Amino acid sequence: MKCRICGEPASISLRSHKTAFCDTHFITFFEKRVHTTVRRYDLIRSDDRPVVAVSGGKDSLSLWLLLTRMGIAADGVYVDLGIGDYSRVSLEKIKAVADTIGRKVFIFHVPGIFQKDIREIAKVLRRAPCSACGMIKRYVMNRICVEKGYDLLLTGHNLDDEAAALFGNILYWKREYLWKKDISLDEDEGHLSRKAKPFFLCSEREVAAYAIISGIDYIYEECPFSKGAKTITYKNILGNLEEASPGTKLMFIKGYLKELKEMKQRPGRTGIQPDEISREYCEVCGYPSGGGMCGYCRTLQKLEIPYSAEFEEYG
Amino acid sequence: MKCRICGEPASISLRSHKTAFCDTHFITFFEKRVHTTVRRYDLIRSDDRPVVAVSGGKDSLSLWLLLTRMGIAADGVYVDLGIGDYSRVSLEKIKAVADTIGRKVFIFHVPGIFQKDIREIAKVLRRAPCSACGMIKRYVMNRICVEKGYDLLLTGHNLDDEAAALFGNILYWKREYLWKKDISLDEDEGHLSRKAKPFFLCSEREVAAYAIISGIDYIYEECPFSKGAKTITYKNILGNLEEASPGTKLMFIKGYLKELKEMKQRPGRTGIQPDEISREYCEVCGYPSGGGMCGYCRTLQKLEIPYSAEFEEYG
Image (cartoon, rainbow over all chains, first blue to last red; front, top):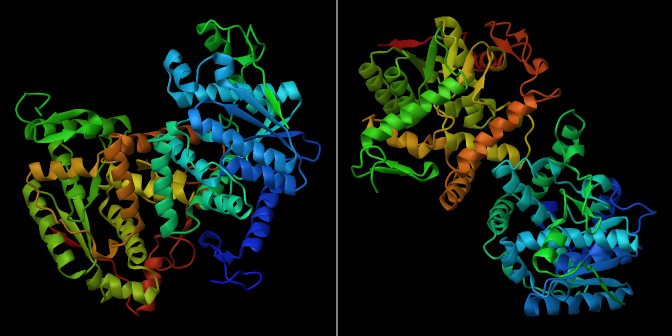
């Protein structure tokens, strides 16, 4: 197979786009697609001050690098969950990219604050690690935006992530999530800062190719707690359907976005509703809370640790 | 495992209902569930004159028998597509049940009318056999209702059929079908007669068990043209998900019905729209048409056969 642009041997074939590229022209193609997505869905505006949530994986590091190449300077924020080597190596990879692109990264050390790693915190809270992690991450992301003046939080969620999550939400018609998932969320909807996912329409395979060709040294391992998660089953199902009918995942997600857009134009309960947005604030830290103390502060209280939410600044 | 009712050894375990039954109590359980569905969704009213679309398979024959047991007398209608032994054996099974329950069945012989079987007709029309079959069946079902005064057409579609079709419609967000699928369709929506699917919430496995325990002699083979259909892939996927999480299919379909109901209460385009219902009638036969001649009459014209739509009456 040959590159559609230059005719040299292709290094990646994209069946869902019925095309193939050499390394160089794949990078051009991929960046152009992300650029188009960003513009079409108005994800990043010229006066935005964005921050990228980085994990050390291919998605967030690719996004961080790609933004720099697009002329969008963004700092990073990392939540160190204290999961042994996994967290340590992730941070190393992040620092290496931060050095390369010359941007700062704010590091929130969970074990430093809570004197426990995420597994131990989850135990204390009697929640699954992923649930405790989500609660802390949401808090930290809100916090970094307010404290450092960022008005847009960017995440590296890709098409496969989104399609798998949507699959689960539709399979069980989880109305609390279903029509609330979107490529971007307004300030109000996301609490405190806008959120956007520029890789919403890029497959995991495409993002991985972008990372590898760009020479990004990312952490290959998935979080050890993600094992056996249902989303992995859904990713496999969608992967098989994609194999049989290339383009399936993209049609699934694009069709959803179209449906969502039309539904939002009709009166009724679609998307995040005003009455679902917390107008209550935590009595300890002042951040949004479902009432009384927020989850973050309740966790600290349970552990008998005084309030703190400091970031280490690197770069 | 023991029967939940009598404690005798169970012959069927229903993981999605977290229960098990002996033959006798499974029949009671199944009939009660169908009865509840019929009542809850107002599928069959006391003054209805229903007709059952029978194919010779487990679903339609079980439905026909079950209705009789519920005290709902219904005739049957069968479309003989002329698919060799498959059609011949199907009709034999249907006649046997008709004899048992003492009801009439109207038989529409495709080869008798068109002087060709469905495969040859599809070729002439340059359509897939399933598409030609669908067109003729819809016509014949309308016709039998009007001609013989039935106001409700019942079909044996089961949970697995409906879940697989819904799966495909959502995967590609087929808006022309998605929010139009329902457990029942009004006169207007279905053209000429109401339609209802009493087995909408019963799994294929449950219906098969009902047929076998009831001693119904049905045709095991699927239609030879259904081979390789995408719905079979979707059925397998949903089957695997059901295996891992019993109740998945039922939650998928019930969640959809709930979503649909709420959407129908909101203004906008959900369900079949008034402007989508044909108010034009075929210039030859007078039945609903998209304009000019209907598909049935156009097919006859193409084959240079004068109009006819006779039924054989058995029983």
